Image (cartoon, rainbow, N blue to C red; front, side, top):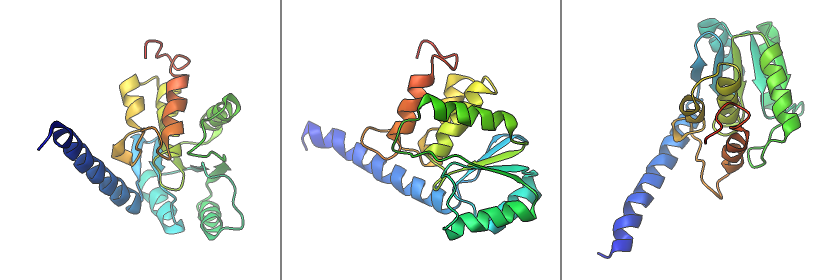
Length: 186
């Protein structure tokens, strides 16, 4: 066996395992506590998921990072669940494959400040856009360590932050913002 195979085989096995893990996590709803009693993250919740999160965690608002989609059943289900649970609801249209501009970052920060807590943030898979939002919350609101913030953009939540992957723009957005977030030597 040559040296190339010795290097590439473990990398390929790791990549397959990471992809399978991410797919399973996303399929299970990718729900996680970010800050107890304050911030939670998930993949696209169904209405009954929202009902359950309200009962279990006291969720008071939902931030949908997919943007308003009134013609889609998932969106109507989310709005109905938010209404029946008397939750504040906000939409912010982000794209996982596009870096956030300063206006989008400012809009996200305004929503963090204004939405009642505990807050549930979500996108479709709960990995890329939601990971960036959770990382920015930890960095800007909670003044967490860089490591703790960046962990939100990791394979633990289904984010694969490698060039040419769908969510790479979320990783590069966080890296670009690090000096403003208090991580000047990154």
